[in-house]
Length: 470
Image 1: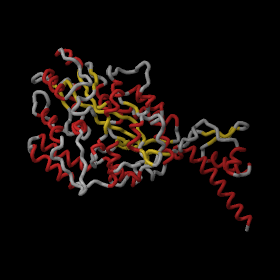
Image 2: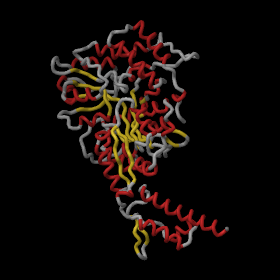
Image 3: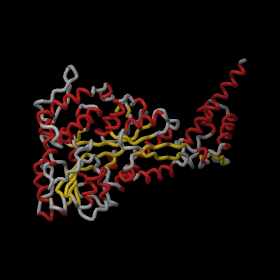
Image 4: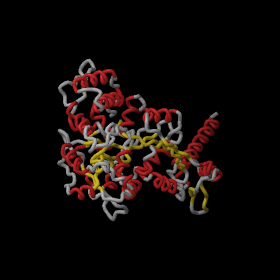
């Protein structure tokens, strides 16, 4: 009887050694060309005899994962196709130009030939819910996700689908904070951008105007826009006002507080809500300055700007990548201020499916994409801002033309605010947006707007999950 137990335990230890080494090789943690620990070390590590270790190594040789080099050791070799791990990476369609993702994945595969990455295009609408459904079905292992998508997943009770990751030490602290949980992070910051003003320098020179500075108010912008506009040729300013990462800027700058009372109801009469929203309404009332196009697509603004049909746009560093080949000189500046100097911060991060069947390989991909080397490649080859502070603030010979005030974002960090700072759920923000649209199009007057917003917000009950995950 004791002998049977001993054989059973021996087999368990042998299987443990083979499974562990196999997993480390296939996941890429043991790179091609590297040697396994010496047989004597493996004996101690797995409590096996020398003969048992050699039997285990022979299995890995037979599987085509290592080669035995006499008097040297056991070296990891390139795997056969059936021995590779496939990681399914969900991405938004703009991430290619925003982060040069194809180039990064090519380098990842060169370093880790045991891992194949299959990209999966994700839709814009209903992003958080779609990602959750795909993770549940095992269709995604890693996903790009922004701070609002994350908020939506948490509110829907789907935060538990995300694997806890190492937060990292070199990421800007204000990027990591929204995703922190139990000493780690559920989303690892990848790239980020504040919402900024972008302007055509040639148009300003043509009209003899001073370029925008950090002291501009919205009134200053409107005055400059009127000067820059040329009838039947170009407009002075444009942005997709109803885009989720545009119109809330006016509320953040006005310091509007959306706090329910003890009964969960909202009281907005007497607040600065109307004052904040009047900025957008005034822009829409100036058709010679601002094109009346209530589109929710940010791409409209960049397209008009690139065609020189508009002189200034509200945009992000992400979208500057669409302007890299512009035939004119452009630059960036902080947004004009309202009552307070504030702008919206957009963070794009990476999350791992907790239920992934290739979790170790998925984590390795995330670690690579957020490594200094990958982040520096983003800094050198795009106009996006990498989350790694060392990479973002790298200085040296540039490989591409940049706006002269590219590093301006560093000076306005104290003004960064998240959409979550409105203290509303994603559903409440969508309900509020409908009422804002009614007001801006003139279908609702000032008197009735506050009551309509109060009813809309009170009818969409805040979720317990809105509270920050910490």
